[in-house]
Length: 115
Image (cartoon, rainbow, N blue to C red; front, side, top):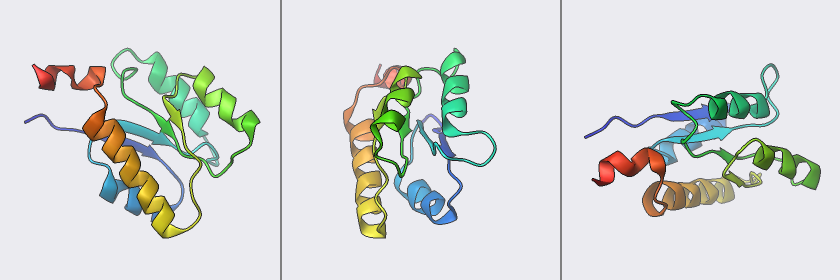
């Protein structure tokens, strides 16, 4: 069995624990509003790396502002989901992300496992 990794870029410890518990495969979840290197910069860097650029990325910000929505897609993010503020809704969103991106979607980075 192959080893799977996650790249979670988040500055909220509670969100880190909840997300790490729910997601167990290759997926990038950058928080846009980080204090030093923001999620956009992380996403650009990952998507420019040929060894990493096929990893799916889901932007999980607190903002629903349409101006914030366009930039991640221009930087090749696969999805933008506004982070819910309450724990149960957040857990439901993370489980939905895992269900779709890990269990349902056929992804290039999983192609070797399918053969």
